[in-house]
Length: 270
Image (cartoon, one colour):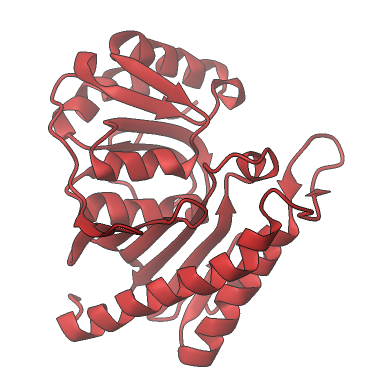
């Protein structure tokens, strides 16, 4: 069902407010004592008080303003996930960048209506950037300089593309083989951007972002923002992206994505 414009505008404004309260909880801990914990006994999966405090602040405002809405969050799980409206939260996407003091972490907040992403935001409050929008509304960048529309750029050839992935070291053998093949064809590759790379696809400065092992809170907001900017989102098997966990490709140009999928499809089910 298509949402009425006035209702969608109200939710858009609320999404901006959610980013504001999360930033108030997170920013004092950036490049400060962030309360680092490790969630894994046999590895390293960091979480900080910024992750937890940011999600608590977002959930609190949702409960106050829209108690009928559901929430799915990385840190505190599900609450009414089958509601008509469900907010999907990752308060600090890129916790490793956060604890390293790098301003490449983002706050991801998505909104689904009847199971479909309709609004999303990728926020980087330290540098004052909020990438926000959806398919019905279009997407825009809100920054200290004001508001500007977001639009992906045309890049039909993979050989002209600027691409990214978060970390090739976490890819399986088949995934790494696919990434290596795509990277060999592309003009330029960047690493370690997490969801900030997805924002750059929406902004038209990058052309293709490839990642694996994404959870619903990693993918929901970027899907909305990139689609709102005219981009395309797909799984590595070429199917239209939904918010299920797995391998995702975020692209500005369908033709560029199609060239990359030649390699990606081979690794899609491995």
